Length: 311
Picture 1 (cartoon, rainbow, N blue to C red):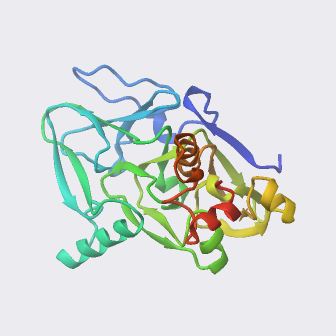
Picture 2: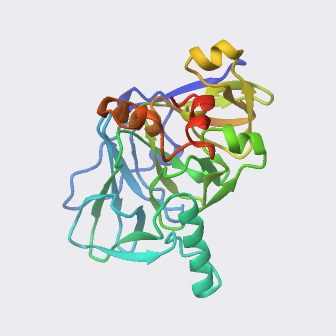
């Protein structure tokens, strides 16, 4: 009753009710086979701008299939395309492709700079349906895990997530930078000082490692999460660090020195297998660098990984 609502986002085991928009009648798909009515699908609401139809396919190694009406567009990270219909034209643009960057070239340069800071490419690809009827385009994550679909309008218009998590979105979603205000959180929080900030009112698809669990926190309610497993949260959630335990826990417990402390109200998404942990295991098995994480986590490198629980 008063506890958190748990939602496991994993294929057809997902127990969160479908968005209200999915109750609309399915559009006429003409020559295409209709998309399924599973909890992993969504049919556009004609009263919502930049709404798209989509279906996420697969269990563990997923891809998202987006259906476009004539003139509709989807924006994706460079290299994410799996396949597309011939009537869908692709254009590489400088920045995040949201179309909302003012200031001409300088505005686009600023948007591209934000993407570069968060570890993304300077360019994104815009896929626009230029033909008649319906057309589809599919995108996949470059790493094993789950694709989480979120309607930004239903989470207050903003989502804060780990770096490199953006996969694709309806045109109009902007990708920005979220700086950690607390020094300790930036140093030892597992995600560094910089995270991604996704803003807009349309659908966005973010890639996360392993299985994703959603927790909805009441006001003042706290959860402690391994710093590497924190995938995303809404801006209303307060993100800080707490001590994980004593000296023995730090050096022999394998959980690091700090946990991420998340205090409600708001929503939190937790991933079971962060890519940094998977990469460390693979490097250890290959005999390289002793399994240390060389591209993620805090600014203190291997020591930061030790106290952050990523080793």
